[in-house]
Image 1 (spheres, rainbow, N blue to C red):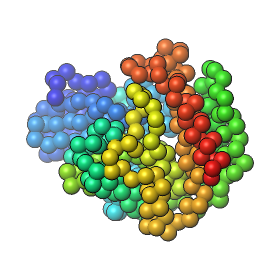
Image 2: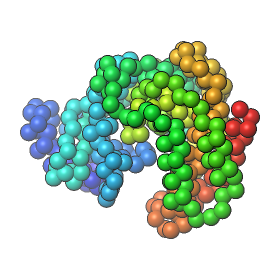
Image 3: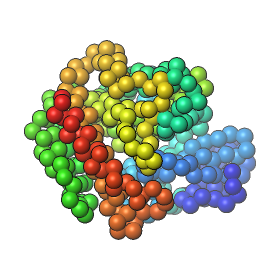
Image 4: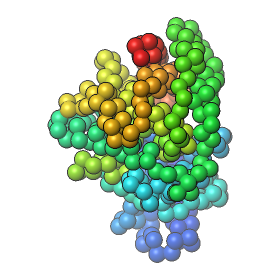
Length: 340
């Protein structure tokens, strides 16, 4: 840990707050470091030299409170802690901006590895890689088996008309970042709208479920599912479609977007879908739609990043190549929908 505090977290302020709210939890001066990765909300590890905790807060200079709702994220993790879904234990929520400059919550530190690429998985070998990825499906089945009412999440979202709202929302996101011609993307959006499936009964969904949003322990089991900022009540097959999309190999050398699908032993997207169907009992016959929607959503997200890069609003390496990926994702979406 470095002695200079990271932006967005003042260790002394945090220590005073914890001493007041949870006397005895912390036994010395706190040090903090920012964990790299994650889409938007900031994650820090803090330690007093003995114990370790994790702090989550919105990004610096955030404006839209609804997009970075700490209370909501804290609520879903707290509710799921009593279920079969592995999540960190939450310790407290602070909605007073005067402590760290934004709302935040504190949870237990869980030891584990988020595997972000095939190269990171390779040292596990084929059998262990297979076990870890199949565990991802089993945990998703456990999540979708949770009764929202029973854990106090009965009002956690608006499941009626969920797919239609999602499609419109991502269409608006696309319109907000139009800076060039993107052949096929409007065709894909329209085709998804024409073929909207009938959703199964709603469940708690994660919204960004993939291998690098879970921590895998040394026994290759999932120790914790992280990054619940997009969770809600909705159509469970949107989670499966996203997982299938992320499990499809992309032939993109030196791509700034990593995929784990080419790791030796990684189960195929078809096997993951079959395992989910068998274990959950859900009808997955419309899965092509959900997978095509995942391709569309990621194409829009990547185009947004590319658009910000053209305006000089991104910081870091690799952003200059994001734009090349968007047509690939559009093509995959169209092909998936056509082949059904």
